[in-house]
Image (cartoon, rainbow, N blue to C red; front, top):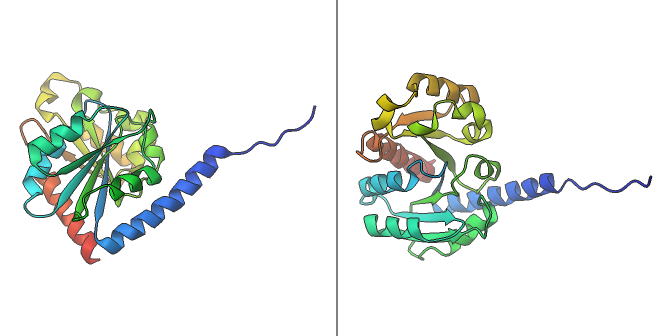
Length: 224
């Protein structure tokens, strides 16, 4: 039987994207722009968390948001109406993630005035977004209480690449078999350096800690 050439396309795609992401990160550093890549499952509360957080920090730093979805502009409109900041919608054409090239396109379409902090709300799932470097300075994710404290065990890459884990919907802890200490331990198994902040986007509990963390991150990125 004749042998055929096998090309590792997936590896090549990742390598090219990693290189593009590194270049983008250097450009953001030169401009003093902090890009946060926020990931989670659908329904975890990303948009509600962002609204709460942005309203706490928008008078201190300039903030813009890029909403990534397969279709619709629901979240971008919601962000803009609730916070008044610039919010644009990125349609992925059916793809379940953003890569560095897509992120660059979004950044190029933000208003010329610039922002100190750009938040990318990635497509909602715990698999594909974790595989592609967007060029962000930092990766963060939201794990909601109803999803269960075992998700770091089931989706190791997502928790390995995230510097911050927000545990949202703590107001329903009494109604679910979710152990916060056990969750922290599972996160540490995947990423010992990741910080875990419990929050409730609905009531605002804990969101100030996330806001303070963001302000510290942006300040350090601009000065270091």
